[in-house]
Length: 450
Image (cartoon, rainbow, N blue to C red; front, top):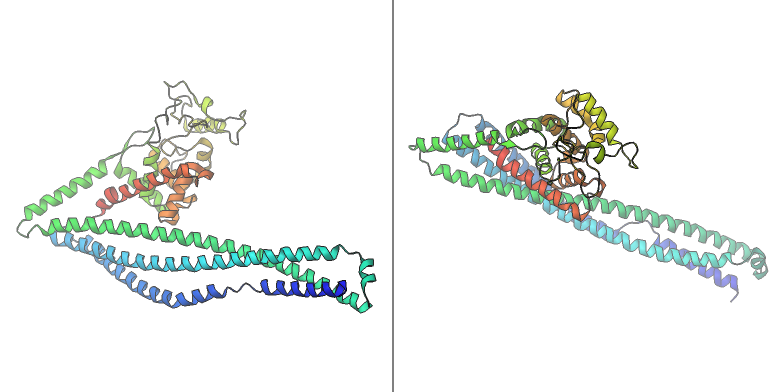
């Protein structure tokens, strides 16, 4: 059989392969799975809507009871409402988790189908490129001389163009499938984070139930005739609340302030940024205890001064903190040689200021926004209200305003490590911050709202 006839058959074969493998990326198996879970998803949504209505009902009972005068019956009713609300929330979150788990399964299957399709396309693409190169190795004169008839030459030329068209289509399919695969992976990552958030919420609700049940048991043990016993419980609760409000909230490089005052500042900042107060205060708590060298430079008794620990205009650095720091001190009327600053840590630069530990260039970028919230113009990085507000604004920019475990964890890590937030050696910081946030929320803020 002549060269052209053999080659024409090969071209037809590989063009057919390209058409079959490069067919529109309809993922039959994945679509079947999606269809199978759609009905179940609709059922879960209906059940979830009913639960959310019941939760709202319990919240209204809770709000109503909290407006009543303090009494034994009122407190038991509040605890019952809290327990019921927490149980309903757990049921709702469990439905959410089941739906997310199912969604993860679907997305994983879609990704698997896409990866299989990409591999098939790559294999066909490799073979088509090799065959095209074989055809390109022949000159026009060789092709003309090898034809028995002129019509065969044009037929081969037409097959060649068909082959090139198939090659182009296959390349596009590989690109499209890769893009689709990347999109599905991003969706899968977000779904997994949502599942983690829901599971963390369930654990928090379980703790609410546990604590409320203990308190309820204590109240039920008091008979109506034992008013003095109830009064004692109430007195203890009031003392605890007063203790929490007056507890000193240690902030670095500034006078300690009562927790109630710190909470007031954080709540005000939260209203502007959407970052929850407990998380704001948790960051500041963590920042106050980072190490023995933190905040121990540039004081009157320190040998290392601000020009020794900050990058300046003559240093090979991406920022000039010295010039900005001098400007900030002039603006605030402070002596730059006595204000406490963080010392260099791990071979880097120091110079972070106040409770928020903002470097001068970062504070410069945020100070106008801080001033709009606090009304202090210029704001002072060593002032607790300004520092708490700056932290809240920064955390909002890092995504903490989205709420939930995953968003807060990532924001805490970015606050600490910047672009290196995802490195394993920095994970400790995020875990410690969220542990502080849990403690502050459940043991310091929630008791104030009883």
